Length: 130
Image: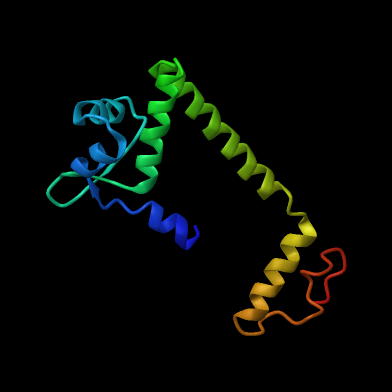
């Protein structure tokens, strides 16, 4: 996670500030939480604290509702977005070949103290030199 993303995900805003920024009522915000469209963090006093990402999500929900989408439709949109992100992540993970994995492992071993010599069996598993 980049530093910018980390800052945007910090839950530091109380509900009163969120209400002013989004022009939503506390009741609406709590309803969207109840519908699991947002998940604000709780502080030590069990008060809801919101991040800039939460604000973005609330404004997005508001836009979807203005466009005529209902809560069920909005949930479906977010479900599909989540599935797409999972598929992208899987696709990125699958792009590593066996030789990529061997090279990464060898680099890691070399980095932590020269435990693997350059002509290790990791380079050519069919012809181990050990």
